[in-house]
Length: 148
Image (spheres, rainbow, N blue to C red):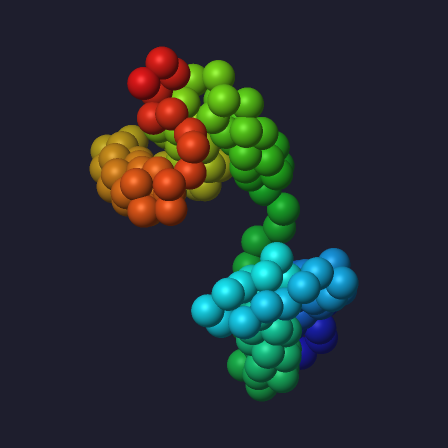
């Protein structure tokens, strides 16, 4: 099977490229140790993991032979980046929860199988989990709602 139409080859190349970019960018940062992580610890470890997974997927790809089934989705190419940008704008102006809701709803609307009930349930669950992890667990300084 030709590489341009093989799904796993493209996924492997994406992981390899992203991991290699993370390694190159973070190479000059102090690494630290597992108990006292430096600014280069997380990006280099994650970059290394991405490179290993990318290589494994890239090697496995030609043997599996799964073809890319559809073309580009203009709706997804517009809505997903727009949702991320809207999150960045809203997180400071409206708070973490409204920004997260806009991100999830906008990203879900980019797909072909959008079902409002499922998306609202997913939004509620992801919002609760994200608030628990990022606001209460990690202590990020974002207000839940503007003014709170």
